Every structure is written in structure tokens, then in C-alpha cells.
Length: 142
Image 1 (cartoon, rainbow, N blue to C red):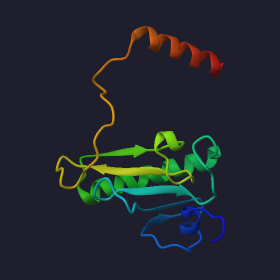
Image 2: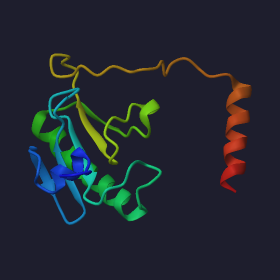
Image 3: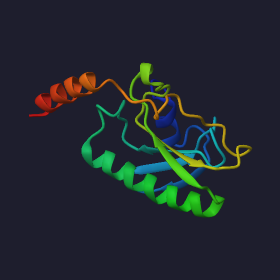
């Protein structure tokens, strides 16, 4: 495998995985450290380090595969919902530096689901800070 990343090793067939879907651009396989029953990952076959690095066509393909497997997982496992999660950078919890989307089926039955929110979405932010950050980002995008 040389200098390849773990996910490149899975794409190359050099490392084991439980693949659930594969096409010309993407691979979907079960996460070995699942947050819930049916937690899987979708990756591009072509190596991209993270969200900032992935070409638009690969990002689109990964997202469409994630949608397809999320629908199948929700139906097959009786999930009550699904989270899609991408971590970009070590500070944002990225641990394998090959772009990937987590597809995490969610269940009311907590024996199937250990994932909890890492922030309080019911606590509003400071209005002035929101306005300032929003305006700065809007200016940066123009």
C-alpha cells in the first residue's frame, strides 16, 4: 500500500471492508466504529484530502451515493431519520484524511444509536455576532 491512506487501500482492494455500494466514482462501506446500527461511509475513489480539496464532480457523486444508501438504510433498518456528516480538518474531528461522508441512520431506540448532539441547537447566538459574521462571509463570497 505504500503511502496510500486507509480509504485508498479499501478502494484498491488491499484492505478489507464491508462494501454496500460501488460505482465508477464512489464506494460506500460500513464504518468500523459505528455511532448507530447501519452507520456507513461514502467516499470518492479518487483521493481528495477533504471538503476543500474534492473536485465538484466527485463531491456531487458522493452526495448522490450518500442519498441513495441513506434511503435504503432507513427503509431496510427501520431508521427514524438519517444524519450526513462530514468532518473537514483535525479540529473538526477528521481522522482519515480522504474525503468521506458519514451516513448515520438514527433511531428513537437508543440501544441502536449512541450519537448525541455536540452543541445546543436551542441556544440562540448573539445577534450582533451573527450579523457581523454573515456580512463578512457574504462579502467574501462576492
